[in-house]
Length: 88
Image 1 (cartoon, rainbow, N blue to C red):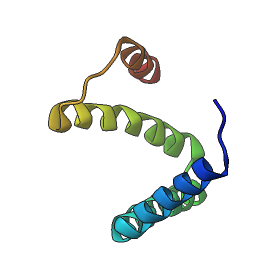
Image 2: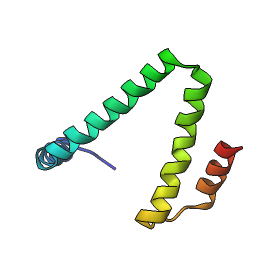
Image 3: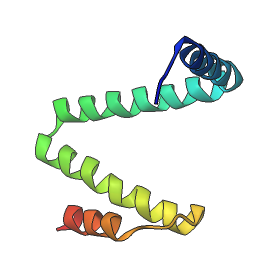
Image 4: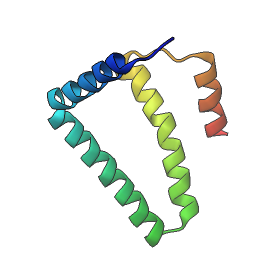
């Protein structure tokens, strides 16, 4: 498929309009990501890295459980295998 200058300009306009539309939500989400990573780095400096790494990995499983329970997300076969491999 040919992607010309018109298509690239159109994509850039859509991205800019989405940023303008959701600026506060983007800022809050970015702030949460920054705080989360800052806390993880602080935890790695103050405790054993193996404990922090284990908690960070198991948080993926908790996020999947929250998605199933509260957001009614569908979990595919591959995602179930991934969750089980993290737990093991």
